[in-house]
Amino acid sequence: MVVEGWLARAAAGRPGHTALQADDGACTYGELLAASRAGAQELHARGARRGQRVAIALPGGLGFAQALHACLLLGAVAVPVDVRAPAGEQRRISAGAGVVLDEPLSRDRGRSGGSQPEPEGLRGHTLDAPAVVMHTSGTSGPPRAIELTYGNLLWSAIGSAAALDLDADERWLCAMPVCHVGGLSILVRSAIYATTAVVHGRFEAERALAALREERITLVSLVATTLTRLLDAGLARPPSLRCALTGGGPVPEALIARAAEAEVPLSLTYGLTEACSQVTTTPLRELARGGSAPGPPLFCTRIAIEEGEILVGGPTVAPAAVAGDGWLHTGDLGRIDERGRLHVTGRRSEVIISGGENVAPAEVEAVLEAHPDVLEAAVVGRADGEWGEAVTALVVARPGHVPGLQELRDHCAGSLAPYKVPREIVLRDGPLPRTRSGKLVRAQLKAPRVG
Image 1 (tube, rainbow, N blue to C red):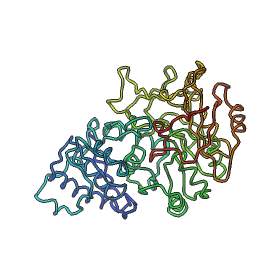
Image 2 (cartoon, rainbow, N blue to C red):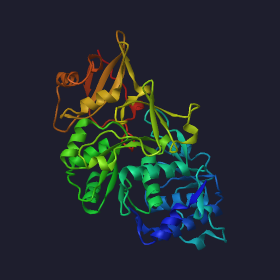
Image 3 (cartoon, helix red, strand yellow):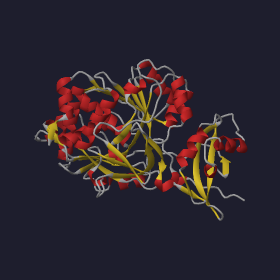
Image 4 (cartoon, rainbow, N blue to C red):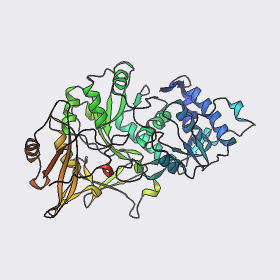
């Protein structure tokens, strides 16, 4: 199936509307289309062809957006590269690309040389064709490459728009890496709906706070750590914000309560790269009734639980990620309540088996982070001759606070089964190792030796 070219449609309908506002300037849809056509011509001159991979090693901004849309116009497969990753990882991600972009493309069609055919993407996109290759966050191992199609991107945008009651004048703040699916999807959805993406090259709490207060931001994508930093910086009653999508990992109940007290409309979202970002999202219409709760699946997305594991199905799932039974097996643990809402409890690969009982680290971390003296926590299993694995917590205290270890154990005992209460709690200087998208890098966490 072929659908109308997204960028061409946006430029035809709203040529003077701001497409992108970024660190290196702003552009309208008319300007972005012209620059992307010039970029597609240059890529063609450099040997890129339909179906071939083009690595984009550029920070989020006008240059990245031009390169991304140039690839989509040409039919080449865009491979975003994290420019802050070590050189070796950048080379590994770029391997197999016919062209590697580490400098912005020309915006002048005449400079690319020769007359080139108009790119196919001006006319339309084939939904089952590959569009981008994204890499997972790499929290428990090396990042994995996931090939997403035009159909995956389009259905994700449709489902997200239905959940968020998308408005034509949305201004979506992206302060997360565009090399990860959560950031990239903001650029793609904005083009599909001809709305505005406001892109910050990196998250800076004071700058994001100023944007939320002064720049008519209506949507923002956050993770628990960035939401915490914004609240600590004084975020309250943002004047234009309709929704702060927060996910990328567990969101502690105490943080949800802080957001409610500050009158920040919070939508809890669960997603993953293999499902093109969002899987479940709290609908905007529910936020108006007060409170935040786990969301139902997006329109046309299906979820199921099999032996505790979350399964995802539907048109947002990357074709290669679908198992023989027709489902994406996420490796995440969860449950579906009586209202069809998904509650995520952790990762199957991270489960600690202590005395024959299964302990999900994320559940224990959420309880610890609800303590007023705790800034962040990580829970790991330490080899133990009696228990097999002993539940061990690494805790970073809030500045100026020194929580008592027994006090923290008593706090956990008030909410957790006895076998889930940490046997050892170690205070450490922060921060805990995290990816740029805010997820704990568990591969870098080690349980301390005790005794």
